[in-house]
Image (cartoon, rainbow, N blue to C red):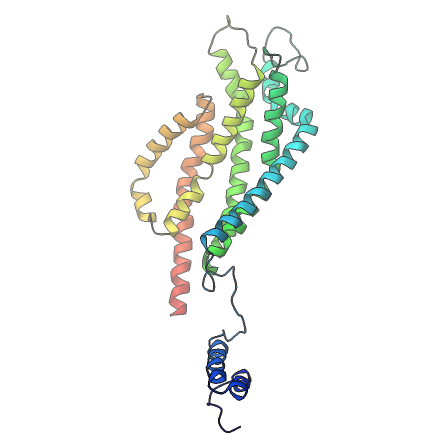
Amino acid sequence: DGHSPPGLGRLGQAHHAAAGPAGQAAGGLSAMAIQTAPADGRLGDPHDPDDARMSLMEHLTELRNRVVKCVIAVAAGALLGFVFYQTIFDFLIEPYQQLCSTFDDGQSVSGCRLLATDPLEGFSVRLKVSTYGGIALAMPVLLWQIWRFVEPGLYAKEKRYAIPFVLSALALFVLGAGIAYWTLPKALVFLTEIGGDNLATAYSPSKYFQLITYMMLAFGVGFEFPIILVFLQLVGVLKPEQLAKVRRFAIVGIAVLVAVATPSADPISMLALMVPMVIFYEVSIIVARVLLRRRKAAEAVAT
């Protein structure tokens, strides 16, 4: 109309024509909103830390929703574990049955059973086995919920490392638990023989499942060692050169840590955990050097 201030879009002109000074003010605000919108047309992504920040209540609500989903997943897994309890039980008791096959009293593997000394022990063992099985079955869901909770706070370059780290951590944990399961029969044989021939072997279900659970957990967590080292090097807390210089002290520290963390305290299990951790120590240095070189090369190209 010849009186509209320059630089306003059609929305600002409409406000100017309709309401005079008030329209000009509203139009100016609209123009500012239009002009400050991203060039790609996005109005803001709540999952992008550059675009939005969640309030404390929103964080708590999001955390509650994720926790509820995790609890539901574990409950569903525990229900499946309760239904398929016998299958899980047979899998977990296999190392003990291998121990029985070494006895000279003519006891068959099929007759090798755990000794329940409490009327309620059978029910409590079923609940524990079902719960542990439920957590194992729900692990993919748990990891996914954790990832979805922390994802909005990560930048693109951090997300690039996050998925490989999560997948590697899961694979290494399963590998560590598998090695613990594989070494357990040998550990049981050692622990039985070291007590002498005057001891009769009859494990209670609670003690046995506590041992096998702690063994698999200790090995699984121990196999996360390279993930932690690589992460600390990528964020700058540690440097590959530092780890290489203190290699001897690190090996001694690993030996002490393994001796304390291994529940069975037998040399077979300790070696089965210590040797991979020493190898992982060296591998983490190599991997970190490669990733840091790639990062420097990418930064050089960007500049």
